[in-house]
Image 1 (tube, rainbow, N blue to C red):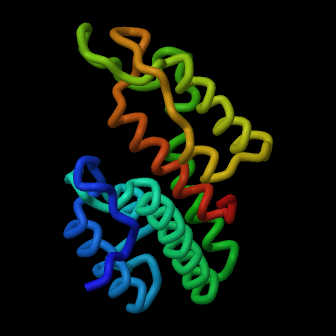
Image 2: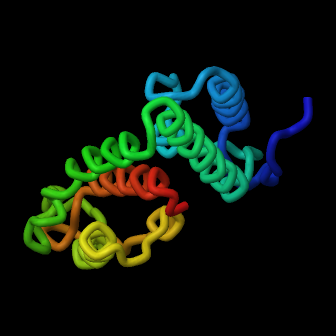
Length: 187
């Protein structure tokens, strides 16, 4: 069997080859089936894919880049199916409804937009997260440029206590933001 992606050396860790191969096999099968809102694998599912690290696994950068391309492909396919069946206005209405779910958090005061980790736990630096959320707000409110790739590439410094936000909650919010941006074609 040939490898899907470049492999790390036996002393470096990469993504579990078995898990990656299983996911991409399932994704290929799902992509070959009918598209639409009822699809068994959504762009958000692709975004949330994760794999264990193993020595000699697949290089993470190569797999992550392929996941980004796959997410875009699933998003475009879903958008095209809805537009074909219901029209462009229906698709934009669906995106607006999904965006409205995100909006209340954007209106919270800076430093209070997400839960804080425990006093001794680390999380994302709240100031840095708030700067990214300001860009998301500017996109929604004023149509200022923002792409899914820009949101994907964000990296935050660590902080503790009230100066930090819970990482899992921020990650989930940003994944939904990427989903919206892909939906409007801002890949």
